[in-house]
Image (cartoon, rainbow over all chains, first blue to last red; front, top):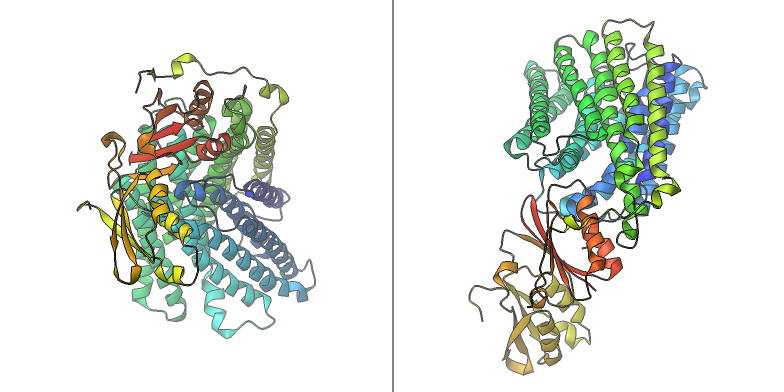
Length: 449
Length: 176
């Protein structure tokens, strides 16, 4: 069963993702993007898609390409397919950004045709990766909780892509099809929730349910709590998205009530998740946490206020939605992503460089590839920046936003430097002494057969 | 014939009549069998060479002559050590040529639970060079060591893994 090999393109996905993250942060620092303004302003749309497609989706896809074969014990059908997916996604994103710039007036308006072209490329790239990742998931029996979550997230990704392509056609065409008007006017919350919570949130929760117990020595089987998280979230979000879409074209008070009910279920599912993840941290056997788990706890701590503002946004979207989207995207999703990169990058580097040398000579430990004391302040600064900027967005104080975003950018650059160091270990690490001691051999028996 | 044994049927008569070579299909079917499963094979001749080959994989045979010179052969897994036999609800993966049932008792047992990845596989790979060819190492793990398998294959070792329940996986490694 030699299915668990290192994914060929995961590190390339991570590198591209981090570059897009820096570009999105750069737009906030330079004042081109301010999340409290309308989400549908072209400059905000550029930053949002750099974040959602360029950073978070590439990060998730890169991680899934590595970990789906591990959790399913089935290989991806095509490694070259993952590279083709990445190229299509990046090319599509570039076209979309240029299309948004055309809407903005920075490029000739005729170039807005690049929006549907870019959207189609992105769609193709995503479908290629979805196929690659879904095949091992559906081949595995029984389908365990993380796999169920990932399959659900891929379903919501397809839904998000279809809605997104309709938006691209609507904005990119000289004359938008009349049939799309209801979606273009009122469908944005559905697109945002399906993408942010359905695709990115479900993936983060599913991957987290595998990685966090593994690196904290906590029980992986989440029992009824895990099933409750999955069931409530999936039901709530499906109800919201489907009834919301129907309600756009066929307005009906019953559909509107179902939409609200879906949101309430969604919020309930997120609360159950927070309770279960707190249980997971409390039940861990490893009392001293490594930085990746501590930083993940910081991200999860920011998740709680995101749920509160999200619940408030059901009743007053204009006041609470920008802060909710910001804290969910930068605090929970990006924070969890950065914290897991801090473990995944040295772990994969160690497997790649040193796994084969075990038993043949001295090798460093995985933790030798990182310097936690140097990285920890940057995680704290990043999360503090997210918390401050969320507050600024909530109180609509725009004066300090760019400065705090700049501090966030510096923190992310410093963390990228840490990832780089982990990926390129010093030569003196390789000359470490062997560290296996006789007491690691629990019991030795040389009895004759 | 063991009454508790379920048999998967493989009919290669048509393939043989067209001059085909069914051995890969037979071996594939054998490797896909779960514990307590056997293989019922229909052929156009008595497959005597196959008896010896599958005996090495731990299978006994019972053959029966049919009409027109055709044969039905039941391949049944030979009884194994009870401690090493997976139950129906257990998951088992393996990569070995010498039947697992004939492996010697482990000369080294490691309890690698409650260790942070990749420490469980580190301890195994660091312990293996001290063993001799043919020696068996047994290790108890929290989860299936999927990153270990490529390293074992590269080093020429054989292994047999059993997941008894979530959080308890046993691996036996026979040094190559």
